[in-house]
Length: 344
Ligand SMILES: [Zn+2]
Image 1 (cartoon, rainbow, N blue to C red):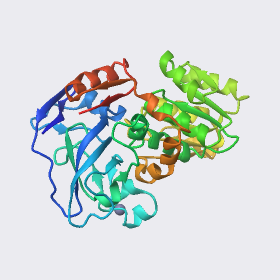
Image 2 (cartoon, rainbow, N blue to C red):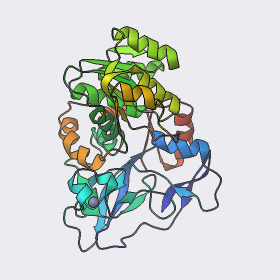
Image 3 (cartoon, rainbow, N blue to C red):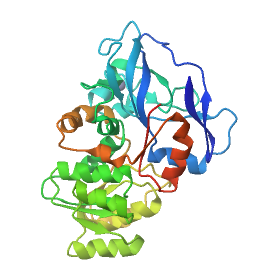
Image 4 (cartoon, rainbow, N blue to C red):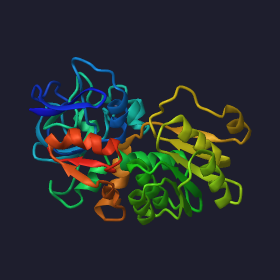
């Protein structure tokens, strides 16, 4: 079968790899019908040291079940399913607490020893705990929004939940990528009264406004902090969604959260330590977040997608076949595309 392999920064290839197959009785075998490129795939695309063996890529996908192992109960051949960006057994102590990303028997797609979503097929470990059956056909118009549940919409929601967004709250979203835009959707869905988006790309800002952003802050760094303070009577916002991962974006988030407020961080941190230990202590700031337990959120968000209350699939602005994946990475890295969908 063919799949995406990254060999180093800027070096993404589509290659023949060993066919995905059932190994454990708890596995399912999926033919991928939709996948996508993630903002977090751009970290290795920028930084990965050259390797001989390469790394399989992709952790967001929808597929048709081809075969299941003897112990699989909840999915069957022919089902259309969405996979969250981590697999999980659904039964361990952390899964039962709704934190499937910490599953004792879970793991992550891709790398050197697992299939990735940016390919023709995937072996899914722990199929019962991982996959969610979709009640639609594989070419349904809702496909982009359903695909977003595998990561970006779930991650935007996790940022909002971690930042304790609720009715009447003021919210700022740091980052206008696909996750930040989904964070705007999540904040509105959870009842935020005011939603500030920090960003400057006209197409992304327009989408953010459509999704419910009430104010746009296009300044950066200290000037952005000053502008948010101006807009909030000098106080700052109740909730900040940090959807980037740079030290500078975290500093901005900590600079605009008001005393007693919370920062939900979902951008993979590219720095070792959290800044501003002193000010966040004296202002009683909560800093929360991490990888979203997408498996839990898929079930929570799915009815809103199926019934058209949210349209996170609008973050996809380009579709490619498998051969177009390397150029899709380039387009996202150069901010020519917000998010690229793959039809293998
Ligand atoms: Zn588990």
